[in-house]
Each structure stands twice: as structure tokens, then as C-alpha cells.
Image 1: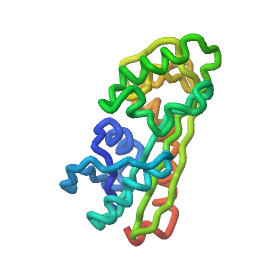
Image 2: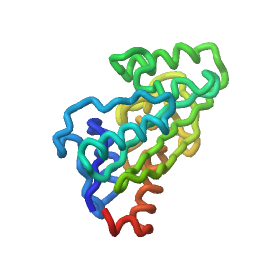
Image 3: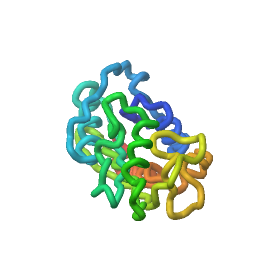
Length: 197
């Protein structure tokens, strides 16, 4: 079974490959010679995921999935949300994004937050979406060296560690992306769709 994962993010690719195992051959955008920056112009996480997956389907005719993830912070009315990657500016700097979040929460006691991942799977032009959510809190400072994005400042409810203090395997078991991918894998392996892939 071959599927394109519409991303250029090698961290994400590695994380999802680990979750999918050997049942699915995962192709990256590089593998299909897609070198464009796929648009993300929607105002929801669901919309962005769909925009990316349909871009590959329409332009390459390949079954694929795309994901979009946002960090939603209760005290910031759900921000940065869909703008998580470029919260502190268009250069998409994880360090600046984290610094801005920590700055905005510096006087705020409520540190509740959640990560939400939405995966848009397009098979033969038909879409189905899968959602994964992990609740937690924003730490007072960055902790840990692994992971990417906001991982050093996010501590999930299920652990005393930040995502950046966990191994990829530990994080995958409880992460938002892990939960969404689990639903994707179950769908691919238990539905009749996999006969047509």
C-alpha cells in the first residue's frame, strides 16, 4: 500500500513512519518530485489539512494524506491555533514562537492548553478526516532537547515530562499526531478502502 504524506517536514515524516510500521509505504513530497510550497490559506486546522491533501490529489493524482496541527491555549482564546507555525512571524521560528507564548502567559496562572492534529486522507478523490487531541499545560520555561515546534514548553496531562524530554517512541504513544495517525491506520487496515489503494 502506497500513500503520499504531503509534508517536507522530516521530523513529522519520521514520527509518522514509526507509527505506521511496515504495512504502508510512505512517500514524501520529495519522493514524488513535488517541490512547491503547498498553500495553507484556510482559517481552520481542518481546512488547511484538506487544502494540502487535495492539492496532491488534483495535481499528481496520487492517494495521500496531509496533516495540520495547532497549539490551542485556553487563556489566549485558542491562539495560536491555525497560526501556530508562524505565530511570531512568517519566518516560522520555533524559538520565537515559544518565546512569544511564554511572554504572553508570563502574568497568567491558567496554563491549560491542547495540541490538535487533523489528518485529511484523500483516496480516489474522496476525503475523510481524523482528529487527535492531547490536553496539557504550558510550562514556565523550555525543557528538553528532542521533538520540534512547541514541544519544549508543552507538558501533556499523562506525564511529568515535556514533549521535548521524551523519546520519539514515548511521545508517539500519547501525542496528538499519534492519536490521529492511530485512527488513520485503523481506518486503512479495517475498511474496504485499502483494497483500492
